[in-house]
Image 1 (cartoon, helix red, strand yellow):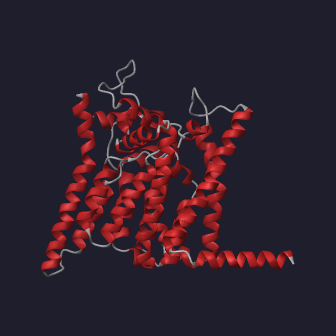
Image 2: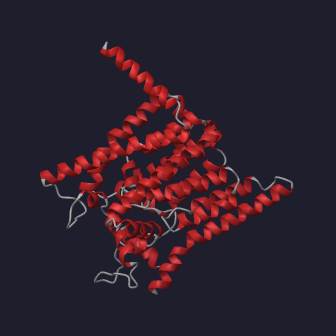
Image 3: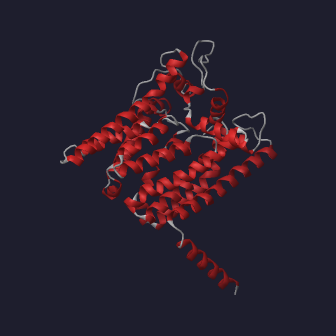
Length: 399
């Protein structure tokens, strides 16, 4: 009797869920994922506090919200409360030290506005903003993919995105969820060929977190592909692509100029970014397209170099698969561009996994939605790795 009642209740639940509109299902998936991530973060914070564990990021007033807002969040808080330093901090040797210029202003300024309107403390307001834009990013990802791969594949992509190993980063006082919302919305405009409408979202993204240059490179790829199309509408579309690409590229390149102008120091932004590299590779000069080889060669030698080449080849093979045809050309062009951006400028370390989140549209790969075993494996692995990632990043390293 009990078993039969359970089956009936499960059947009724499935019936009600099937009646929800797609946006309702996406928000339900998002809410369920936030319950899980909040429970994991809260449990580990409580256990660590009771057991006297040392937090990797020291807080004079340790509570759940300051715990959630470790590391980069403190720089965002500094920007929100006091802005950017006019003088770059340096060590005794005159080398630039880590400072707020590495972080872009849209997220902290938005949190400051929310905090002022609600009376909430920065870390609480930051979590609220992150959760709201995380929901927006999930909706944007679904909208981006549904027209290309269908509702079922898009919902599975959203599910894997929301329950991924690093998904808890979407609810802490980091800029990730806002950036992803803006990028996914920009990509949706690109896919629907409304290129000029990309501009406001992409420009905001350019001042939210680095990485928006991948959008301008993707537009260049689209422009090349559409160059031979004939007709007045094709010419107008090419001009729109060119205009959007140039504006987005200019926005993506402008922050170093702002840092130089305010501090009066040439390459202030670049030297600030390189200050985070010293713990891994020492003081080095920046050369595009070399950071991955520099890191891999230092710790793994020739094997590391071969591994980087193998990873790049594997990523290229994945993007070239015929099965990804529904995601072409826009999503594949953007994914290739963003992958190139990471290899060109980023030193791979623990933040790499967080910086892979903008590649979430590739979760719309039809091979994932077609394989029940693969879907379940990816979902189970994402959930299982969340507490592992929290322990590694909050108590040993940093996210």
